[in-house]
Amino acid sequence: MPWGTFEKIRAALPTVTFENATDLMQQVRSVKSAEEVAFIEKAAEIIGKAIDVLIEHVKVGVRENELIAEMLREIVRQAANRSP
Amino acid sequence: MLELIPPVAAPTRATFALRTVCARPENAAFIFPTRILTSCRSPPCKENWSLISDEEKWKRTEENREKLGRGCRASTAASNPINKDQTWRSKNRSFRLFSLEERDRRWNLLRQEMRTADLHALISLPNEGHWDQFGADTRYITQIGGTQTEVGAVLPAEDEVTAIVRGANEIEWWGLAQDWSKTSARRVALMASRSSSVSRKSTPSASASSASPASCAHPRNRALGNLRKDPRRASYRHV
Image (tube, rainbow over all chains, first blue to last red; front, side):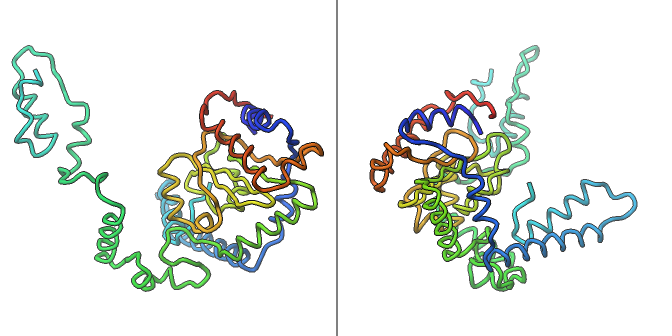
């Protein structure tokens, strides 16, 4: 985390104690709801389709960027965000 | 030399540039418009798009998409096979959204854990070096993120959630792209600094003053205000 930003917040709130809440967030996020599970399954389905597209377009002479473009096209077409 | 050329009767900038070049005297310095390449590729703009209202833009967008058979209205979007999947909500949105029930479930769980840990607020700030990456915690709280959006959030134990994005355009865009902040977030503020997540916990001496939502909101807003004023004062470094 940027130390300068943290210092600014701490200077603005001199009576407040700061703690790392990463574990708290991870604990809450680790328990998935039915809706979240449905989204995860959908995301896996989209990636599966993207891989199918990859396999479909793999041929001798096809460049890697063309394959990636086809995969990303399928991902975006399914209204999903691009992968980081 | 360019000032002598009448700036009229030029349907495009490219045409104007060509006439300018042809009209230059011999041995005159070659002066070439810097934007000629982009102008050549674009048709002449008949109207200033920035002056068109958002309602008019949406109207034209919907009309054009309907002509293409891809309408973005709920009625026409339903014909798109992708939108027949009932997993998603908000069929006419670019982003697939979690429900308000899911939002309440997350916030309630977080606040329950915060009370157990005696935390009064969660401050979640974006990563400073990888656009929207490593921002899952903030996205978990706000459902704002992706598409290289840098977003932060403040989730108080007993107050409304605040999402923080960069720039007025992102405030407007995310106000349309999701609905969690419309009904529950008090404001979507400008963000002027980058950092990662941190939580805060009041000391025993500060617990009394920060116990009520009103007194808790003031120092928080003051802190964000300081960040907005001078975003480059902070010296960034990792810890």
